[in-house]
Length: 405
Image (cartoon, rainbow, N blue to C red; front, side, top):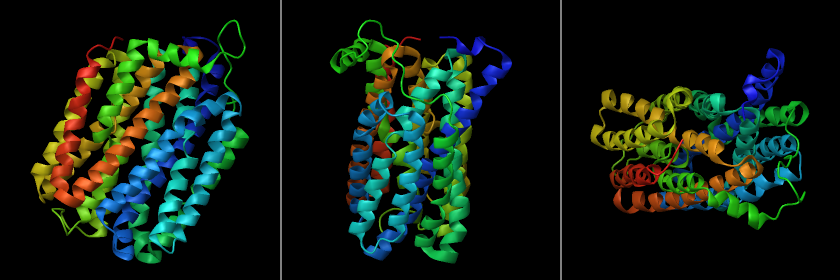
């Protein structure tokens, strides 16, 4: 597929407007993901819960949302994908409104799970669309734009939330952040062109059987190894692990955390997220030019190293700041690299199914990682947690060796 070489400049340019809209809806889901870890310390104090409870909350909510990414991705065959992405944001905004009204931890738990579930179409649908719109020469860059654009949403949150927490509390802050979801949800439904139902490219039967398509996905060795390695690496991934436990580690005074104040925590979290924007953009672009496999392998190695360095930095802020920046650069980058490689190797007729499987399994096991690491933090402390998280990218590395460009 070389669609970027075809058509007039105007036709080529027209695909970037929908890319911006997809990235905007993605950014709002990241706002939600970035806001929750900053709210968790308040929840721990207000409801008197343990870190294990936070781990269970993350595990159950992420597993529920991850498990549904498969069916949600396949809904694009029956429902216009612009509607799926728009409702994703609108329903997530509604979930956040319920979250802000939580009277008990049970209410908070239910609203969090609801928020994870309703955003399940975002990754498989968005990735499938970008794969269709852009060929291999720009795919690494455009996947990186979508991923980094989502992380821009993450950066905005601590910059604003730090002050809002002091002014209107965590409940009011959560309420304020519902408005971007309403905006992007409406824009996606009304303006997202080229995002209708999936158009089958298979020959013969117009309704191919799902079992045969699943076999087609797993028949490709590259697809199998990409999915397996991404599942293992999820224990050290930026989203779902680093973004959840770093704020808790920075605020913690019970275990072996640093005991920092909310404003300092917000600033350090912002530094981490700055790296999460720059890293995917840079590495995605050079993967287009120099190949993806070596870039991915190097990123996995550096991701592990950064987590080890964070533990060794202790409470020395002059060391923590560059380590967090490097961690954002690397630990948030290997996921879009995996996605780009999957888009390269998956057959176009089953690409939507390949992404549905990828996100279901990768995010599903990521939820198990969250649950397990929450228990480790509660029982053994944060240093043990980060040691295990550092092993995860190394465990994934051997499964990248059989990959071929």
